[in-house]
Image 1: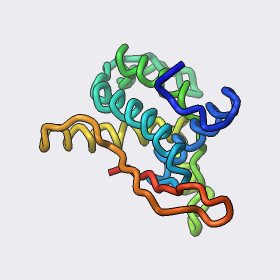
Image 2: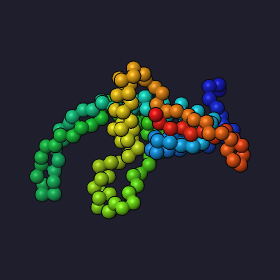
Image 3: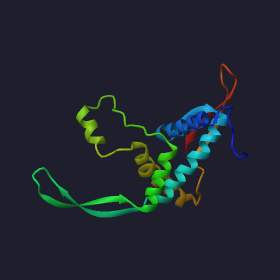
Image 4: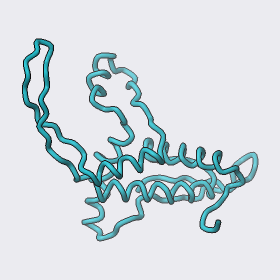
Length: 170
C-alpha cells in the first residue's frame, strides 16, 4: 500500500513505535527520533490535534441526582462531552497510549491526590483543554489550520549514521 513509510518494521511493531512517539510528542511537546519516524509521527499528531481543535467546545450540561453518605439526594449540574467531542475522544484514545500523571518533585501526596482526583485520562485532558483552545486561537488569528508540528533535521546520528530529527509542537 502506497502512502506511508514502513520504517523497516513489521506492522504491529511499527504501529507501536509510532503510537508511543505520538503519545510522547503530545505529552512532552518534543521528541528526538529518526527523520522517517518523525514524518510518520507528524502525520498522526496533526490529525489528532485537528480533531481536538474542531471539537473541544462541544459540551452538554446535565443535571444528575447525587446521594451522599447520609442518604440525602441532591441535584448537581455536570458538564459532559457532546456527541462529536465524545467521538473524537474515542478516536484519539485508539491512537495514543494512556499516560498517568506524575507527582512533582516537591509535591506532597495529598496535594498530588487533590490535583489529580478528577482526571482519569491526563493526556486527553491536555489535548482538549490546552492544545484545542491554543491552536483554535492560532487558527483564528492567522487564518491557518494545520501546521501544528515542525520537524527539524539534526544531522546524522552517532553510531548508525541515521538522519536524526527533532519533532516539536509549534
